[in-house]
Image 1 (cartoon, rainbow, N blue to C red):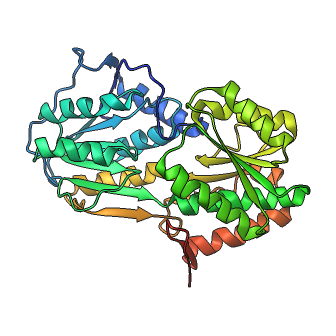
Image 2: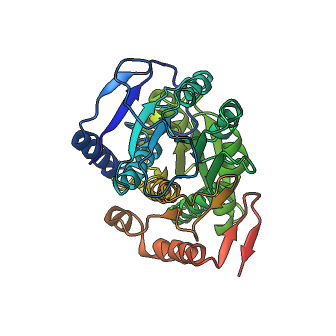
Image 3: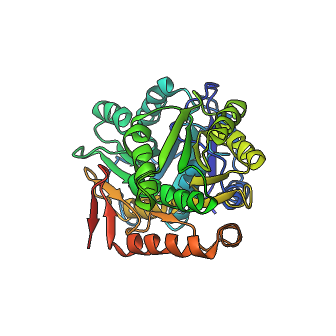
Length: 377
């Protein structure tokens, strides 16, 4: 396996658009990947920089080795989205003889991300800079203007028309709809108030405009009476505050809660466990986190996306300038319905109803635009 090197940045601020406790499988895979590669951890700007080709940036030159860098706007460990990103990119690089990849952890201070990406581009070492975060397209567009030969592959964001940048964005309307639908089915079977909860780390455009409305839309597809109690922790790490908000929601009638609050998710899980409520998980398979409490997992397959798009780049086929939106029918957004913990925690009646929705979305019989418009075939 080629060497993958991870660089730590010294930022200590805890800001991130989406960070959560992930499935153990990705942590194990990532640990194995880094261990087998003999990876080292140094601070950005330190002396352990990895040598790479100074080849001019392009769309990937088939048959020639290239140097790639993954810029993580945060840290890898404990961030499932970034764990999947690293695993997917590394898999593609492993299949391309002579190519190398380095992982740079940029820390949580968003104000520093542009300068750090600028440094990577200015080095002239990396033909492709890869990252994942809704803030990245704007940041990388600014950097691209200064380095016209630098190419960027960006996930979880959108920017169309820049010949140096390719973006792939997940249809989180469909993801949130799946979460809201299962949450409402479980809450309806439990009886009582038709009320769900959503605890967010912070407010941001995708949360306010896509995820929250999609979650409510999914719930109201079960019964128009359902409402969502939406509350914000104010950061991505305060488990105590997450627990406090969730406990209050439960006292006020919320039966199922969707936490998208990073480290604060643990507080939500504990409050749900203590209060007899349930939780729906987002981005990765969360059933194993608290079996019997987690009753749904609406996931993103970022490892697959990272592998496939990196491979396209290395084959010289990645369409820079294009912005793609992918959803359930494309295979990048899904609902985990075959986990034994899901089967054990959720009644057969509810599972059958959820399966009907999942099947329609997977087959493309139903798709949702980001504005909530339902397209039926």
